[in-house]
Length: 427
Length: 208
Image 1 (cartoon, helix red, strand yellow):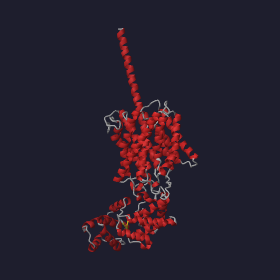
Image 2 (tube, chains in turn green, red):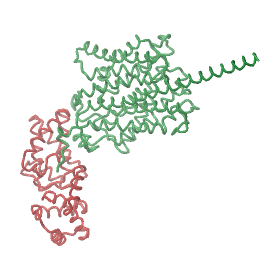
Image 3 (cartoon, one colour):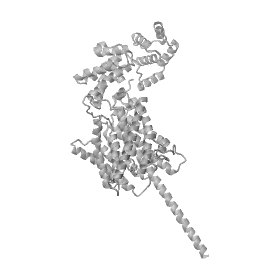
């Protein structure tokens, strides 16, 4: 009797602890899902940051066009990424070069859908980086076509090399935790290709001397506000890449924040040393360069190296801008210096300052290979894309449209009708 | 319906239905005999038109379209909105409109440095010759106008051609001064030209 009672008690205890364990697992899964969804929302809100920053950087007559590009590319990118991109990026990869399953995902688990949601926001970010660089002279429909292809192919294929478990760069040990190269550099190099194909805005460079002429944005308050919103969204961008509500979220967020601060300070220091005016746009871009830079190593760096990474990223902004101007490449918002070059530096820094394995040359070499592969794929791939679209339907608007403003010519709307003479109805 | 609305209704329908060569003759005819008449019978106009010119389209069809365009307030509003949103570059600008264009051109060029004014006109002169999509006689008229000033103003010109002409000047000023200054010049020229009496019928923004 005693034996039976003890056996029953034992069985009961194991049943209770088993169900408690299962309950804990459920809670963990739910917490992870909650965190990933929250982070997705933060990353989504970065689109608003991009939209404000880019709109404020352009002239008033083009402000709506920029907003529209930002608005529509998150819509298209999300749909295309669900349809094609996610599969190419995270599907089963037999070759290590691209995925071959999970297209138009349905009948999947809640966890899969949650990850898809999060990754869609990243895809939208990569696509939208291009829009700012080529603002004020790009056809809306041509831009849409290119954004679709970038999201459907260029971004996810490189992403599969790094973030797919079977990816060839992942197998080499390439580190890019949240996408300094995967998202930002890929977007930056696509922007570079686009700016080369489309050419500069009318009168941007002096015909005789080649000297650049400033074309100030119409509302720098929007630029600053956009910068702040991007900064806020980046907490979700980086910390959300853990894909779980883990212990190191706080460290990642701290590294992110410190790098942003150091990036802005780096730009200020550069301006002071170079005896240049400390421009708001440069400071905002400096902070963003810090954020882009830390994205690769935010989970694998100590805070002091996060500061250093951000600081150097900020210092690189102005020389990068000047380099582009020397080659007469017109980048309206500084997307190429911030995302392209900032992303490359950040990815390299992730290898140099890897926690517990500082200055490992093998790791640094692997990072260089990944950075180079990202540049080659994104830049040359998108160069072909933009050339083809240019041949087929034209990438650039007519000079008459550039004169009148793309708000009216592309969208038949204006941002500031009370102040904008060029768009009064002629009736 | 105002004279201007009626006129635009006629021009829109005629431009949409007639070949370029015939359109020129009909526009001449319209300008000379009917453009200043606030009211006239559409059938009387068509009778005279068909007796003078060889029009490929059937009279009945043209009558229906003109009647619809001139009688219907909704049609007028639709044409108005359509023109406001998607101005037809084939629309013909009459003398009144050309006076406005001249004023806009003069105000714009006056804002350039004296040494650069000739460069702007030169860029327009050279650039307009390369516009193969326009009638060569229209281009010739415009070039003579550029050379001779107001006294060489033609009777009419195609809106698209005038827009291109002005844009060539704008592009040159972008190259000379940068787009910010060019936009400032454009806005100032528009503001000043808005004040001339003819601008109430043909606003200068028509040519931008």
